[in-house]
Image (cartoon, each protein chain N blue to C red):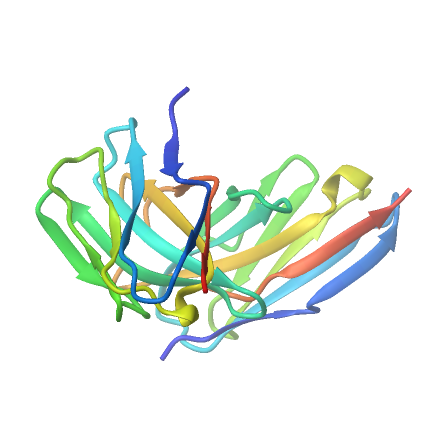
Length: 113
Length: 111
């Protein structure tokens, strides 16, 4: 089925460990983005990309890296996890950030101990 | 800095009631406004998108309005059903293309 696929769905890390959240879409969307959702704070934009090879920072980029080597994939890397990064992470894609609706993945729940 | 606020944070209504969810934003220079639905433990599903030049959009029992000058949008749900129970989020897209979300309204429709 066409859509946005996120892996893993759940992950527990220890402080200081690194990991990558994967995001893949098969709709040939140019725009991809990562959000984190915390209780009472809505969704906040971490990083986004408007096409392969192009990335930019959102509202809360610190502690996260991204790359966009292909149109389909937009991985989010935590180089040294901190308890403050405990959250639910959502990846979204669209033809463009504003003109069309975004398609969201099912989310990845990350706990950092 | 754009800020998006949704009131109320939670709402409980009996089945069949018509209801209104509110969304306000501080910077009227938006590209569009979107309403999303989120079921517990799930991702977001887009409900309605209103371009900055539009006043409203309708889809089935849902109607969303936009008043850019006052920085307000409402989502009207007619004849609510238990299946409408979910969290509803609004988000504005700034001219720079970034989506800024409100905190959401958690809706519970009782049978």
